[in-house]
Amino acid sequence: REHKFTPTLTEMLRDSDEDEEGNESLIPIEEIQEFQSRICQLREKRLELRKNLRKRFATMCSHYKTINGIPK
Image 1 (cartoon, rainbow, N blue to C red):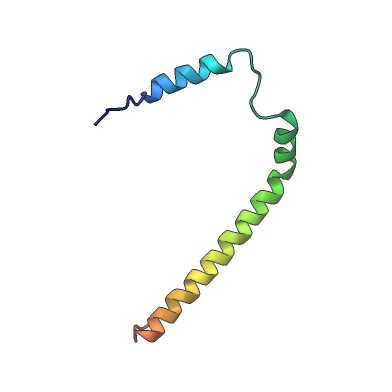
Image 2: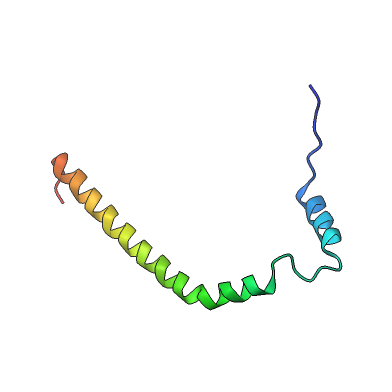
């Protein structure tokens, strides 16, 4: 069996820094600006999804207790 060398995190970070020298960003500025303009909508959507998940979980727990005869 051939043993493959796995670099350490420190080595990967160092190599990454060397690769990025001279490059301002690997993500185009337009994509960054688009994300920043939508971040408020994303936060609201996440809150809505969390609320729905909590509600569905509570319903599921209530249903489980009813089926198994566990007092609420």
